[in-house]
Length: 397
Image (tube, rainbow, N blue to C red):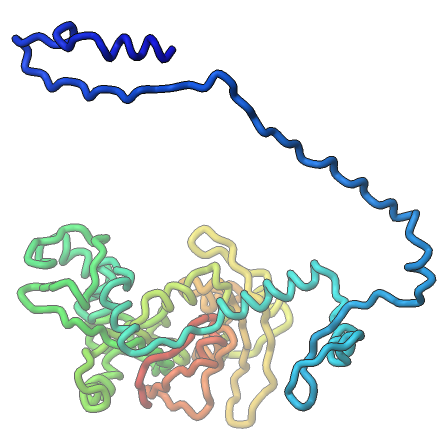
């Protein structure tokens, strides 16, 4: 092999390169020599030692009398670490007092703790609440915002929108369901800017006198009894728009007693809807005497607007010295138009006066005079079946 390599090296370079080609010549390879005898030093790893049989231990280990122990590193009373052969007393005490409840019960307790943490009312800073209100606050329907701002009733607000008298951010809006935020959107109604801050929710109870109509815009409306209340609103709530009040349900002109007045449409819908199943109690003063037959006729009910209506209860009250006429306590839950009067009329009786004294669990206070009102507190709203966290209203009698 060495001779072949030498022969290749001795050949002339003209055989490999031509003058017409300007190529860089190859570097000459060094001379390679190979030894004819090669020796390899190969060694093998020793065979693994056999594993000891645990059953065949040397007799010296068992006869030595030494015990195998696990060392415990603990900190002594002097604060230094020391080595001991038994567990610390504190560990043994904790193991003895360890909870032995099942895993399912532990998981249940953990879930209850997490639920308590999630349901707890979060406490955030003022800046965090402002950031949430500016960026993540839910929008409301345009017609609902106009009604809450006191522009008009819900239906009248929808008519204003249909007539093209409402603009949102400079564009005419003809859809009452348009989601808006009065705090961020610029809303104009008939050329007047809607305030960014909406009035707070107001909940009032009125002892309605005879001769007043439960409708807005009438000459003798029950809402006219709140003129003084609204006139003093700016003094009691500076910088806050006046609420647009309306009655929850109605009482006819001749009926007196309890009626709720508010500016919260959701509250009004909740307690006036038939699904609320709120009972209403009336005291009817009857002309003439009331027999047992008349009580049975009232309890059997009557047909009103094609629907058979029956009262929940009918009771003849005891005679009072100052009142010579008979009095009936009638409880109904449907609240149809003139329901109590139709029930008494069907029994062949005539009503002298009619007064509503209770709605749900809220009873008209005996010291609330005719034509006066009071603010409904949280407990009063709960008695009416309304579930709300806070009553943010400032009202007076």
